[in-house]
Amino acid sequence: MKPIPEPPEKLTSNETPPTRHGPAPVETGALTMAMPIPGGDRNAALRTGLPPRLSVHLSKRILNSRQVSAALRAPRESPKPKQVRSGLADAAMMGHSPGMQLQGAFRFLRLMTGLAFGVAAAGLAGCQYLAPPELYVRQAPPALVAVSTADDTSARHTFSVLIYNVEGLPWPARTNRGPQLRRIADKVAAMRAAGTAPDIVLLQEAFSREAIAIARRSGYLNAIPGPARSDKRTIARTQVDPKHAKNRSIAKGERWFGKRAHSGLYILTDFPVVAAASEPFSPRACAGYDCLANKGVAMVRLAIPQAGTHLDVFNTHLNSRRSAKVRLQRADNAHRYQVEEAAKFLRIHREDRDPAIYGGDFNMRNAPRRFEVFAGAKPAFELVHRHCARNRGRCDVRKSWDSDEPWMDTQDLQLFSHGDGIELWPIRIEAMFDGSADGKALADHDGLLVTYELVRAGHQDG
Image 1 (tube, rainbow, N blue to C red):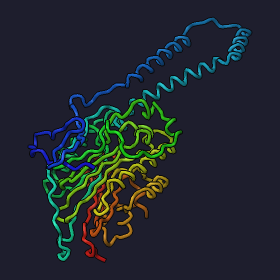
Image 2 (cartoon, helix red, strand yellow; image 1 turned 90 degrees about the horizontal axis):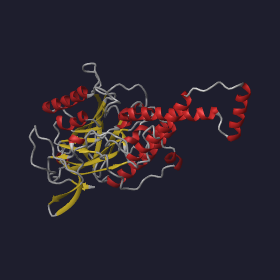
Image 3 (cartoon, one colour; image 1 turned 135 degrees about the vertical axis):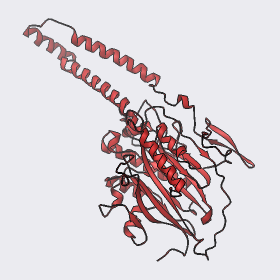
Image 4 (cartoon, helix red, strand yellow; image 1 turned 45 degrees about the vertical axis):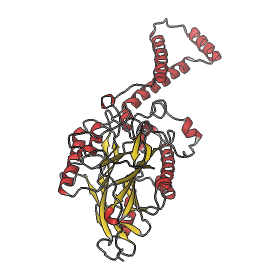
């Protein structure tokens, strides 16, 4: 985990937060550390093109396909029946019947068609070189103050956390998303002006320029991104089934293309940032078009001065199911690998003495097998949905639930965990950006807003 450096000079509303390439030495008092700050040239943000070796390979295959097509179109005399039988017999003796040749040609054309659709649909996970994520921290963490447990008011502190998959996918996966993404940013900014905005926002699928701009337009002091496109995994990888690795598809973006986008993850907050870390999933621990984005986990350690504690916040986006466009078994296997790698990240970076929140798009809706794997791998966290469903007297549920297990009806979840001597409890759960206000949802996901209360031990009601 990397301590956050002293913030730069305060930016005006028209200035763009500074970005730098690669690891940059950061002065933090008497220590100097190398802290990677993702960033890049905005003018070169939307580059496309295939890797050189893929271009060469495709050019050779296309040449062969033209030869096959020319041979199939070439006029020839109709042979006599005996000649046909003789020709088929000779071809069969050689192991190359006309049917086999045609079958091979059609297989190749099907591969090329699949590859073309794969490149076109690769926007599902950001196939283009998209605008790089930004990191900026404008508020230095203050020293934590001791909070008296004798005063019930000072021993309690409430705050809210929003998770929102903003559907910031690029063309051609999505078209004309700019207006909706700008409305999301404007609504959050208006809430901030009114003092009703969430204290912490976890974004997923913030790939496009307009989606990334939510971080700036909404006006939060701190914006912490997830893994950048070029980030490599540095902690232990999970063991991937050799068959899963071997059967990677070119047409589905699982091999040769590499990572064409960053993780799409952001954490926005005004709370002072003490430390931050992120880690991508292994390049083979994915399935389908999800492999084109460098998905992973991001975390921040925040100072909550009013409560006299730190808070660890984790954000992730796991492998999709049907949207990956591969067999469900393969997509579920990739999801299992990512759940295991995310659990390793949490065990390394979670500070047990502090409360923690784990949220994101877990892609487990109506997928009992996925949820069973997730429940067995996650560290000591409790689902907000489950807690609120079983403790209606302590948790105000302001969203409709259609089943006794509402956590199985959504992709977007939040989990919480207590710290030493301080408890963290969800006290309200509701939807945001669901279209209930004006009838127009702004993305294919609703926002999930949870209000928490930090309580010093011994002050929880009941």
